[in-house]
Length: 163
Image 1 (cartoon, rainbow, N blue to C red):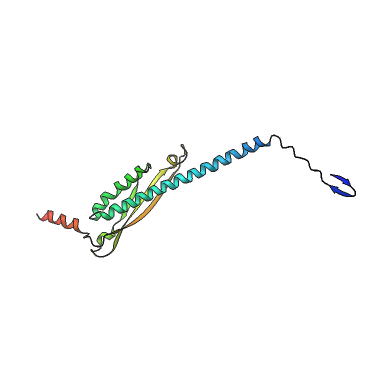
Image 2 (image 1 turned 90 degrees about the horizontal axis):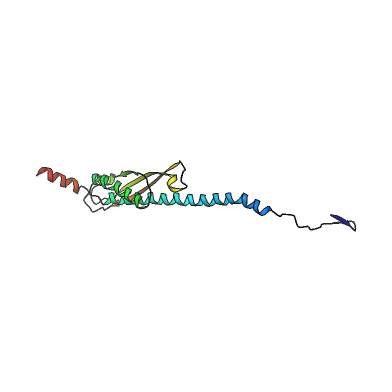
């Protein structure tokens, strides 16, 4: 600064910033890489959650087209496992079914539900070597046909026993 005619006048000088670019790169590069990795990890977890949701939907649909609750209990879990394998998830699903709809008489609207829980190792989804796991859960409800006899399988079993 200099004084001229009783006032202050600022001198503009370019700051000496030679060599700051490599330092900025060293500081910012890990942060940018971490943020990109975080976005990729979140996307992979969301895709895995979608796969579990698709497995729950397939299991509920399979249960809803079964003729009895017992047949639904047998056919729904393998369908859920097949959907998870098709989507590339390596986990053993726990499939729980809500089959109360099979107890309603024909002509009454009813539904069944399927809940799929799958514990996925994050090393399979994110970065290899991570020891953590995450339990993903999805539920889906599927309607039963109100005009289909729901006790057909039980009636067939009774006919076989009587003969």
